[in-house]
Amino acid sequence: MYRQEGSDMGKNILVTGGAGFIGGHLVDRLLNDGHTVSVIDNLSTGRMANVEHHKDNPRFKLIKADIADFEQIQGCFKDKTIVFHLAALADIVPSIVNPRGYYAANVLGTMNVLEASRLKGVRKFVYTASASCYGIPSKEHYPIAETAPISTEYPYALTKFLGELTAFHWARVYRIPVVSLRLFNVYGPRSRTSGTYGAVFGVFLSQKLNGKPYTVVGDGNQTRDFIYISDVVEAFVAAGSSSVDQEAFNVGTGKPQSVNKLVALLGGEKVHIPKRPGEPACTWADIRKIKSQLGWQPKVSFEEGVHKILEHIDYWREAPVWTPESIQDATKDWFKYLATKG
Image 1 (cartoon, rainbow, N blue to C red):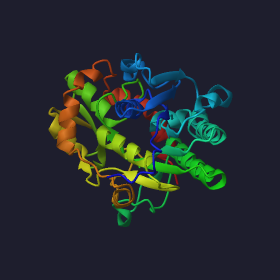
Image 2: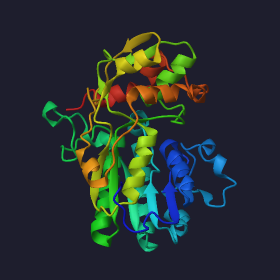
Image 3: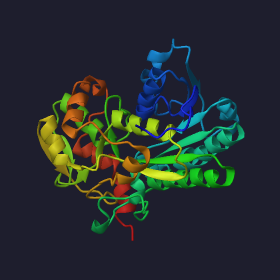
């Protein structure tokens, strides 16, 4: 059982970025649990399709607004018991091209959400952090505990970590109970299909649908701590209902899987593209802390998760089909800036 604090998982919840991949699944769960849920989303990366099935639910409200505009959002926090803050710009490549936009959304936007929460008396704040804050750990730090050194390799990672620091600062100064979840490699149905070159699952599923080879970075032996979306939602629920304050938790499986194994489970041919600077050979979460303090643990195996996502593969039918050539063009700034680091 998750450790709960009275009825803090109460009746009126706000989810920023609730029309996104993770946010949409969290909204589904919260409404299914009987809560009233308001969503703030500017729909720049979120999709109406992720929440439109709730449009006739009187306990659901979608507010199209930008968290970077404080005056636009502050009134939305009135009478909210808990805020799940998921709104952010994601992905490495666009953060390198547009660092100012990422800072505005992920740092200033987070501060605005925290300040609105403070002014309206929100009782719990759950921040969505990123395991990219760990950068490229040395071998002695695997599996990666929350105490591992922070080494942000690109603007996305930096801005997400600055958002976490801001949340903890507001917790210390203004006494807003905060929990931060450092998510590892989340996958599942309804993950983003935008034109941005990003997560491996979206790239591979579109390639599979179009009969194209999978573009495997390097030799494919690199491993990622892939965590299925339903397990991630459970972590948010556990964090939101807990009495824990000012703590960061890794959210992964603790069982990293190779990209080559993913290719084998999906089935099909592959081609290799150059290894990229700033990417770790392994992401591997130490999840002892979240198990101990929140009573959470992952339930979906990698094989089961891949099977589930293949059952929804048509979702990626309209996604971009990446080729070695288009990936090379999309990542040119990645190599331009990160390959010369240090």
